[in-house]
Length: 399
Ligand SMILES: *Cc1c(COP(=O)(O)O)cnc(C)c1O
Image 1 (cartoon, rainbow, N blue to C red):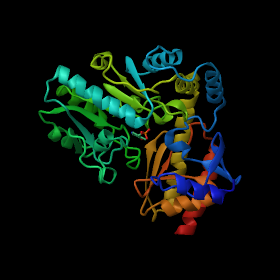
Image 2 (image 1 turned 30 degrees about the vertical axis):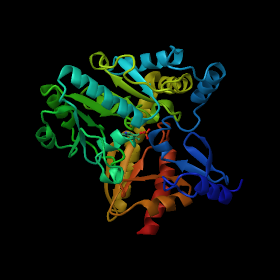
Image 3 (image 1 turned 60 degrees about the horizontal axis):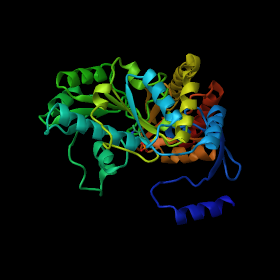
Image 4 (image 1 turned 45 degrees about the vertical axis):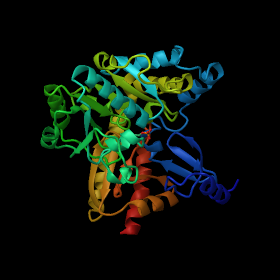
């Protein structure tokens, strides 16, 4: 079907919840994607931090094919080999002792919120239910997770929201300390605020948060849905900050594109869940676990991906800083870690993203005026050079 007809039908039949670009993507390989009209794109969005290994990585594709021939789904009434293997791998490479599987980031956070409330009631008393989160955060789109999300525009119109959340300024330990009350049971943060515009914490912030949590017997929940799975040059972003959380959530990059989420916790915290406490029909089914195992195995093999991510992240950051020098009236800031980078502009970036797309470059704009770069970890110097060329051209034509 031709592009025009596809776009018409898409708008006709699909609920209008996204401001989609007028393009239909049909195929992808590595960092490249192709439209239904055959146009080639350099993909620096990578499914917004999902396609860690690029499009259709052969190991992931083969793992999915093999698993699809063997078993797609049974039910969590039974044990499943791929789920056991994936859980073991996650435990062996993180602070956690136990894993709960679900299908998305929002669900992983929802599970974390439920586990936290159960744990706090058991260990600290009935009146301990309040979770403190940050303004400008993003934790998902279910009712509890939009409440956790400290952004009015995401909550607007959905009131009444879920009770038991309070927001404080990110990166301000004094604000957090003053917000603690007799009902507080946990602090929930993204190590780097992704959706909020790639906002970095200052070097000691997370350590201070950890200390405050220990002092007041609060759980620390880290939402690593975006920062996890090698994105920042380590398997999990918390490893950069010399702390461990009590609970961590994963999704986006976990399955290289299949819907899988996970909530990880220490034994002590995990024991607040018992049979019947929480469940998910599809959570951790054989198909998605096979994809996640292939993803993790590829990431962990001889540490190559982490090195690559670190080197390419530094190169991309350097090139973006050169652009900043050239276009200092438009670019305010370049920041981020590994291959989660942001370029803050003095103005809205939607026109710029559209112009880049016409030139065959996919970029993402978040928080209104921040270009967010989340290319696959397999990105190469020549891809970055190509991207910078296009972005430079577009910046010159706009300024
Ligand atoms: C994307 C994201 C979510 C939500 O994940 P979904 O899979 O869309 O539910 C939650 N937290 C963070 C930090 C995210 O980046």
